[in-house]
Amino acid sequence: MRRPVIAGNWKMNPPTLDEAISLARAVAAVSAPLDGIDVVVCPPAVWLTAVAGELAGSGVAVGAQTMHHEERGAFTGETSPLMLAGLASYVILGHSERRQYDGETDEGVARKVASAVAHGLRPIAAVGERLDERRSGATEAVIDRQLRAAVSGLDTIAGSGLVIAYEPVWAIGTGEAAEPSDAQSVARQIRGILHERFGDDAGDVPIQYGGSVTADNAAAFLALPDVDGALVGGASLKPEQFAAILAAAAG
Ligand code: 13P
Image (tube, rainbow, N blue to C red; front, side, top):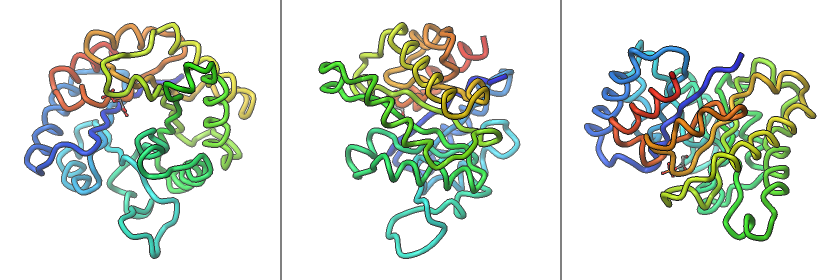
């Protein structure tokens, strides 16, 4: 049985360590009474050590926002899976902002997903179409291409902890979330592709929706049969908003 995974992607926020610690503390406090969901915060890499320390024993997991696929070497500015081991249990890979601004490719995401699994990190592999792709009717083809690539380096997903995040690019940070029925049909497509590749293990993979998730709309996404969680940006920086999203997931 899959458990909902609610992850807060803090992106390049907050700007100070003190704020990162107090945000982590607030998330731990609101998560404490909730059962049946996995709660994750993904701070900037520079705050990972402190946030992981603050959250130790709280039940809130820590994730990185990206990672290099290699263990070490001449890769300026990068973070390796060995460095994340012991600090993070999740890692977001292939976020559209990294695809857009940092040249991340389908092939690169494939290498990273395989490396994360090999190092015991749960990958949150993000897929999603841009507005122009949606308008031209290419959503299904884009999801198909990105998802098949993301899992192409895995022989099995049993025990991998794989999470897929469906984040339509046009819904990110715009206040314009997808229609729940559209999110469900893409989530079903994702489940179908995973089933074709990996058989019944596909049923264990949490599929998140992300893109302008708020306290007001979270319940509608979380009630969808193939959506098992959310990848939350802006609202994850506001503890009372994030608390309401977690409460909706915990039911
Ligand atoms: P928003 O929730 O701010 O739209 O961001 C979504 C996102 O990109 C999470 O990874």
